[in-house]
Every structure is written in structure tokens, then in C-alpha cells.
Length: 430
Image (cartoon, rainbow, N blue to C red; front, side, top):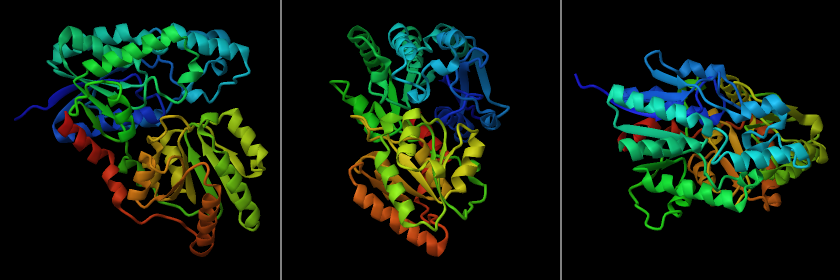
């Protein structure tokens, strides 16, 4: 009987950590054995980790057969949290940052300039030592590192240099081009060091995976002699097992947003339109539900546009509960941060598709998100300047809902983004 190929996956984020970043390799690990590959996980011990969110429900996806190795770590964020309080330490897209706070400004400067490339670098020496042991014990020749935190890629870089493993670097987000990079207050000297480390990873990795075409192009352009066979796209997706819950049609017109949202997202066009539509349809009970971390700047905008009475702040919830909120919505709101590199895809989009609810999106109409929404007949994307077109579309949806009482989607094209289908692409790639 043919033995499965063993692959070592090095990931900082793993259950009980919550958040979208955990799910990419948790789901790959769930389905890889069906395609003849045995994943072995190396992660940080949760007792030492500095996780922004906790979601124990994700542990249900960890097979009892899956080998998971955990190591201790030195975590400066935990130290800073102990000294100044967790709310003072910037995290999760900097939704909790008050830029007028002198203490938070100092902490952002410390984080950006004393921990390069990030504050999880203290895990690396423990992870590298354990990775060598696992590689030797299980005769592994392929290692996958996934980031952020991008310090994890430096573990792969060292393993490649010293053991000459086949190294695949997976980028879930950009490194020096992430939308909140400027908020880290790097000095020019530190920026140079960070970019050098990023380039070393891109040059030395045997293959590089990104989660969308725009991120692939972004990283390719950092190398002068791009090897076209080196960069590949495997998107995020949804797990059909998570969506066996019944799709519900609420009596209210519920607009749901999930995930982080901060001032970088610049959602004011949408809030202006929602306020106008609410006034035009006074007999309809609207609700703006935000599930996740919402910055004070966004809350202030909601209040400014007289939407506070329909605003429901849910906060961070476990993934299973998030799915319930998505499938019990009327429509879903999607927005990508406003940056110079804003044509990517947030992982939430694929779960929005699986929830089978119409999506209103804010972001580049020529970006990856817009293309997938169009491909799956899932709604419409609008630029921030398209206030009139957005309002017309929103009003059309409300009028349609008044008649049908649901705006559920019918196209099956979204199924290509199931985690199982994507894992098959990964298996072929490995």
C-alpha cells in the first residue's frame, strides 16, 4: 500500500486561535489526506501565544489522526499587555488604535522598530529547533510556511539554507505592502531591513502561493527576474461542512458585515447611501449588524450619519456563530481597505458566497473581489465615488425584497471555491 507523502506545515495561528487566517491551513489540513498527503502541523503553544481572538469551535476540524506539534515562545505582546493592558496594545488591523493616544503611539513605534518583521519573532528559535526534529523523524522533504506573521517565513528561509528542504511560502496577506504598514511607524533604516528580509524569502523559496492574483503580481514585481513557475494563486474558500445550517429570511432588512473594519476601509459612501435609503423607506425596519472588531472611527461615522439606532455591534464571535449571522441576513456588506494595493480579496468573501445572500461591495471594480462577485453572480461592487449608482442599486434591492421577502442567490458557480476543491489544487501544486 502506497504511503501518503508527508508535508510539514508551519503556522503560528492554529486553534484555539480565532480569525480568518487560521482557517486557510486548518481546512487544507482537513482535506489533504483525501488526496494522498499527510500534513504535520508545527505551531505555537496556546499558553505562550499572543492571539487577538480565541475560537475553540475551530478545534472541531482537527482530526484525531492529525499530528500537531507545539512549542513555547517568547511573546513581547503578552509582556506589553501585562504592563499597559491589552486594550493599549495595537492588534488586528489596528482597529483598537487611538492615534491621538501618546501611549499607543509609543507602543506602535516599539512594535514596528524593535521587532522585525513582527512581534511574533520570539517563536522562531523554538519553532526552528522543533522543525528540524520533525523533518528528521518523519523524513520530510517539503515544508510549507504561512504568514502573517511574516516572521514565520524566516523559519522556512533558515530551513532552506541549512537543510535544503523543498520550501513553499504561503502569503495570506502582503508583507511590506499591508494596508496598515504605515501605522507601524518604521524608521527608514528598519523599512530597509524589513524589505531585505522580504526579498530574501521571495528569492529563496522554491514556490510561492498567494491568495489572489493581485497579491501574486505585487510579490512578482519585487523580483527583477521573475520565474513564472514560482508564483501561484490558491484562493481562500469556504467549507461546505460549515454551511449545512438552514438559510433564513429575516423579517427585518438586515445588512451584515463580518470581520475587522477600521478607518483604512473608508466606508462613508455606503453609510451615506444607507442613511438615504432608510429615509426613503420609512416603513421598513433596517438593521446594520457588524460582527467583529469595529474601530472608534467607524462608530463615529455611523453616529454621524444617524444610523446608531439601527446599528447592532455584535463583536467577535466564534466561527460557527458567525455563519448563523451570515445566513440569517438579508444582504451582506463587503469592503476592502483603501490603499495603493487594494485589488485583493478578503477571506470573508467566500463565506459570503456560501451564505447565498446578495452582496453589496465597496472597492475597485477591476479588482479580484469584483471579478469573483461577477463570476458567481453574487451582487455588485462599487467604487467609493459611485454614490448615485450605489444608491440606485440599493433601492432596487429593497424594492425587490418588499415583493419577494428574500434576496437569496441561485448560481452554483461559487462551489468551485469550496475548501475541498481548493485542496485538490494544492495537492497538484505540492
